[in-house]
Length: 432
Image 1 (cartoon, rainbow, N blue to C red):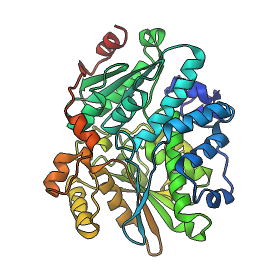
Image 2 (cartoon, rainbow, N blue to C red):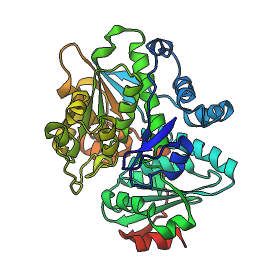
Image 3 (spheres, rainbow, N blue to C red):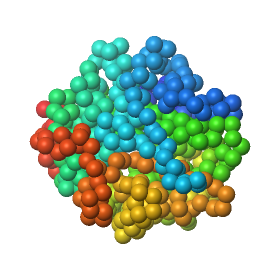
Image 4 (cartoon, helix red, strand yellow):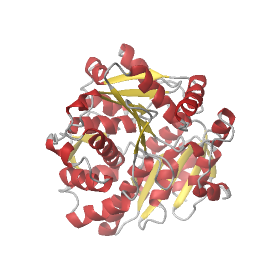
């Protein structure tokens, strides 16, 4: 599989080079040059397979020129050690639970797969790889735990001070070892800007073998395709009603939705997607009028989606050749404020006895409002509600049960380094 940049460069590179670079030299993001279409028989074959079985089949299709069979076995076995169950609210509405990994968030899939891939590469080449990544919530935890004590890899997590929940912060800022948390005096967009700037900073690049574990990196997106494929195959198999399925995706930096669109290019049998956001509704606005207007991010209770200039939108544009009308046919936009999000959490609890986190609630609303007669909805549930105890306890007192792993995490001491939002401070830490 060769990859190309969403920028101006016409360079074609292999998957391993794209993973190590993270960001293309022209500032663009990497995408597959071409995407093979899986045969219709694949979905029936995968109907009753485990998620690790699905991952191994898809990786063999896409990555067999980059990793040998033994390496692909190792990567799959290290990354896909937990399930992504589909839970039915009713006959037409399903929730894909992506929070059964070690940090209780969907990003565990991508982070653990990328960690396994980079571990293979670092051991082969005998070098240290430095990862810089920005987080608005769950990415930091998934990356930190995915790469914790991984030989040959050091990680720097940039996060906006005071803008992630206490539990989220403790999941990535308490580990130490090869994980360094950088508490930035700014917004998530500042953190993302600093991460991108590292890749064009001559001093940093000359001293570090640099890559990123954000959804900027193509190694994060490929494994996120797997749970779409696994869930849809489980729901449909050879059933011709596949065309009635709509995927509603809570969206912030739009890596999760982009992974779904890549799976769609592979032949994922769904009708369309819903890009469901909070008050940071830049992409829903674009889908409405064709104009992309980045803005300063707005703080909400669904904080992992507080992104004012989503990086993966460039990939979405590239997948549709910058054709607004074509994208808008496959992707519908919807957005909801904090009050609507809270009301949805309470409503679903009262009606179904099912407890959602704020991000899943946004996806639920997008699904509810977009479904048409005869269609079915699949809502991606991106995080466990226990990661947002203040919000849940305020809305539904007594409903939340805290998992033991989060109880233990809450007692840990944060070890982050506070820095201003400028490159001088970043250089001082990375090159110390």
